[in-house]
Image (tube, rainbow, N blue to C red; front, side, top):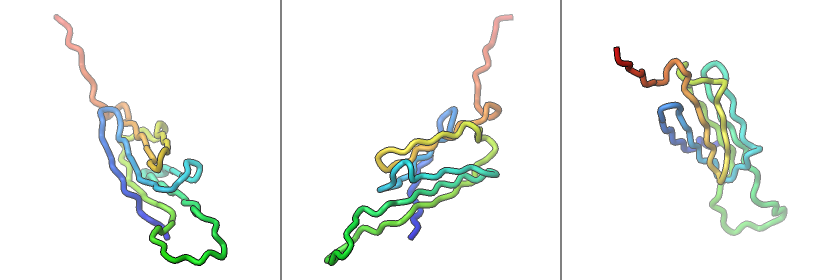
Length: 110
């Protein structure tokens, strides 16, 4: 089973920040790739239990991997993308390219 993780995206002046819920995922099981304008995240969920021969009476938790893709515009500096994963949340930093960042123009007295 593959799940589509819930994602929040926040825009700040210098970057887009993406927060993906990856419940039960260890950081070493997350794979983030960027190629030709497509950002792909995949995460493998390891089994919580090693209960061979167990006689399950009730089970609600469905384990499965996560996968989601996004089309990323040219306004992102692909070489500067970074990521961290903690407490089941993957945080991706997508810095804006210098050419699209707003900047203050100083005005000097003439």
